[in-house]
Length: 285
Image 1 (tube, one colour):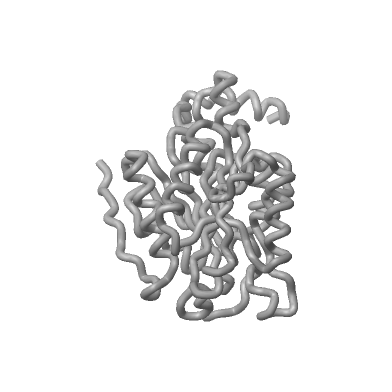
Image 2: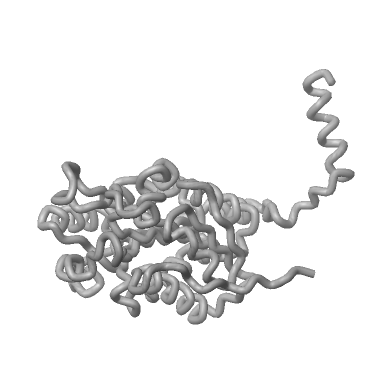
């Protein structure tokens, strides 16, 4: 028998945008009737990296910048799980950016919620890769722009912790995308750090909700890329469902080819012994 883990109360600062992310995720679980044993939440390092402690689901605390490989492995092992990877902009866009690029390319059936606040809050306020250009001598990094530029990406969205209704809808859409076997769902959330980089008022006037634009087509990659870049030139950024197209995740391809999920394989030593001996014989042992 296993003992059910009781979620902790968050340790974030009062007013932190991450509360809105957690609430939206819990609301999405309720809307989709996801039971605790049907979901796994994996987190990176940083303030956002404690979220898996605050929800009732399987949880895993990954190494710094390595949440996506761990999440991909979990989904390949058990494609029945709703696998949710979470992390901050430092974890995902700095040390973990290489894994993000290849997740867009490989298209694993994982939802990745990246909380962007433009600062390293856990280490007391250094600039992150997404810090505004006027605060640094560098251009701000934009994850949506990156995702749109990589062939293979199939679901790219951006929400805000200040817009809970839309954020919940985007989380549900992301989970539906992965459940359908279509692959990687990337959801950046503008989640301000009220202690070191309170961007609530600044960001409120810069967000453009593409869901409300009648002429916007989220199925047009070139159109989406053009719109996102045009807004960035104007010091604004797109929110909503920015891009969506059908694909097929690696775990769905495995299932479609008749391969059993890895979690269903019998890996008891006695059943593997003959295969092990064949391998060793190939080395002359």
